[in-house]
Every structure is written in structure tokens, then in C-alpha cells.
Image (cartoon, rainbow, N blue to C red; front, side):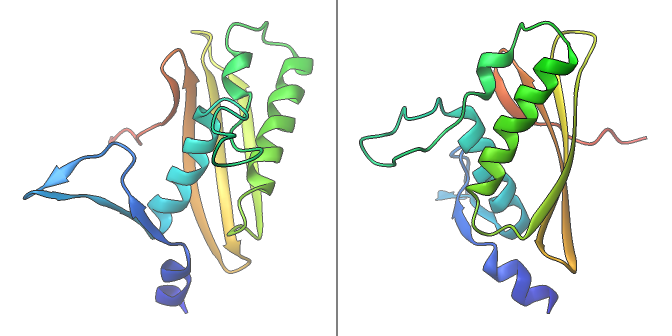
Amino acid sequence: MGEEVLYELGVDFDSALNFHDGDIILSRYDDNLVQAIVNRLNIGLDELDLFYLNYGSIMLNFLGWKATDETISFIKSELESVLKSEGRLDSWEYDVKYLQNGKINIELTLYPNPNYSINANFTVNEDGVTITEEEEE
């Protein structure tokens, strides 16, 4: 079942357009699903409307807002909208909080099916929404 789930998560070009030995690197399986969410969060809503209707989000608009419960509610609502648009997800859990430096942290647990989960951590900052790499201890 594990390999079957991974295959269903897809393969696409790595959005950083990195190359290895002359070939473009592919984003596979778990990474592909996380990349798709990050891409949607980084594109302004309807910026690509010539090709994709209702693609993107307004997540970057929340940078610089006061860190209030109301703002967190707006961010959660936008995140819910993006996650609902991802057809490969069965369900999800998340935590959203402002960091002291004004950045927004999003911790996600994605469930492509009830028996398989993917953890991802995002940071929203002036450079857009980026995947936060786990710090090695």
C-alpha cells in the first residue's frame, strides 16, 4: 500500500528548476504534494487566470498584519481554501502562528488517505512561502 500511495501523489518538475547531470530534477510523491501547496500559496489569486481559474491565494497579503487572533483566523481560512483545492488530500491538520520576527509559521500534517501522513512546515515571509527545513540537532 505504501508505494501505491506514493505513486498516486504524483511527479512533476521541481519548481526550483534545478538540474542534475543535465536533466531537470523531478519533485516526486510527498515532495510533489507539498510543492503543489507551496506553489498555490505563492501565486496571487487569479494571477494565472489566463490558464487556471481560481488558482493561487492571498496568503502573502497577511505579511505585516498585527499578530491578532482575528488575523490568524483570516490566515487559517485562506489556508483551508488552498488545502480544499488540492484533490489529492483526504484531510489535514495545521497550526498557524506569528513568529517574533513578523514571519508566519504554518505546521501542516497532510493525509492523502487516513493511513498515511506527510508533515510539512512552511514559513511565510517577504520572500514568499517557503518550506522550512528541519534543523538537525
